[in-house]
Length: 446
Image 1 (cartoon, rainbow, N blue to C red):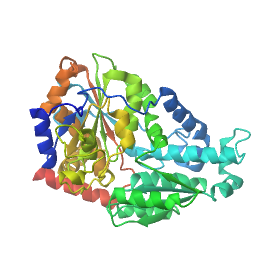
Image 2: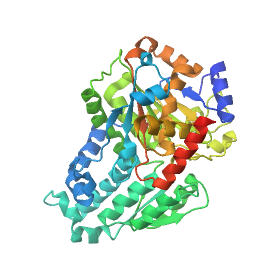
Image 3: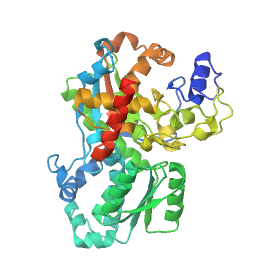
Image 4: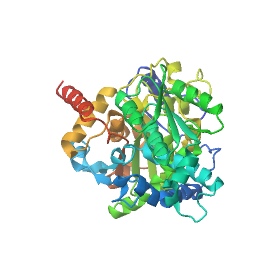
């Protein structure tokens, strides 16, 4: 929706549903808007190349990467049983899953952006100190390199998963690491960080307050690098670097993406950096033939709010608003998505091509988590289930039908590929996951 446009009946109903904390789909592309951040495919390729340069070192630091030759990647899986469980007929295309819930090292999609930013910071310091004179990145595991890195700190504000990726990577290289965590962060994530020697700083407020506190402390220390999820280009490029590998996986799976074979991708969204980066990479790869949708909790729809800010339909919202301004409470079991205010960087990058954003009730997250375990035997955390609501919302809601018609996609749905991006869950303790399953089972039988 463009700031100069008048609200339509459809837009008005979306806003009413949003304020009532009901599942909602807002579809974009009403008016093309240019990003002020002109991020080139070459910049994304530089992030891909950085991962490749560090692959031997990553394999040395993390033995679990031996099988992948030091590459942090996840499989692309067809999930026909889950498609059946979701009652999605073959006539609307095939359902696939990008299994970032199984990413090694950090156990979530944050392993992409978080690890990339730490590697970029380490690379810059190493070059300054002459540690890469011979181009051998394995030297960065030496005692000499670790003594240099120990003079610096890497800090981040997080509800959990980004903190895990930053903390684990930074401590593995020898940096001092600090993670500022909000009150809604899970205790097991704090414990996992402390076990890695990471300083966990707890804050009573929400995600935004933890980030602000961490940023303020870092500004006082010239040897502290703050990973800023709201503004970091390095994080965004790390997530975008997922695209080339996914392009290859799609081709290996004999799926075609073109005008007559559309690709729909559904990605859980917190502050927006991870889905924003992934969407950017895919848009550069597939252009108008990929349609990315972000998925948020009904009480934390910060990205929809950012998209609507200043529009005629919501004139009361000023630039860069929070969900609290709509009367929502930002309370959700999807801790990684409990964010009141979106990344302005991510919003600006995707505004011109984003397919849309949908919201999901917590109960639906647990139902879909349960269905995925029963149908495909896959374990994910609640926030990682957000994207499974995407296909039905797109196909059945008024906003979704309007989008499909505007994009001339209805005739090509039988050829479509739908990819749900599962973003975390590998390191969830068994007892925690058992509670998730139990809750999902109870909801299914209610």
